[in-house]
Image (cartoon, rainbow, N blue to C red):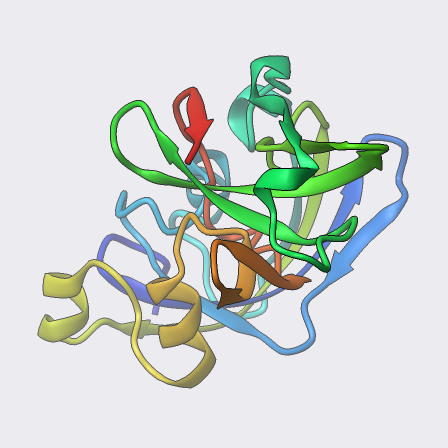
Length: 195
């Protein structure tokens, strides 16, 4: 079967920065619903359109095609007194965008009584090189098309967290956790303010 609209495409991938430094390798193949559903970057979809299982390619994405340019207005300084005890570098905080959507801010530095947060995606401003291999192509179910994403195990988890780039557990207003960057799903947003 060819990669076309409403196909579930299973990929293995590696992502490197513009200098070739490896950033991530897929621990196992991941699937997405192809056809303009926003489940992966447009240029990746374009490169895979019409291909079949076994096809391999490399797609270079400029920041504007991936996670956007860095927006220094998303770097904010907040008083440490506004955080519960135990705030540390690498922790995350949920913020609200001007449009009401959520954004994850990362604690990047603690400087005396100040906490510096960054709402940019960790790879904003970077040129990214995606090495992709199509492992499988299947027709999507009517339910997958209606929901706009592939279903099942890790695929469902990935789709349900589309456009989110941090997997975290909430502890009061402070969120802690480790990054789980989903390179197959764009994380673009508007200017945000922390709440």
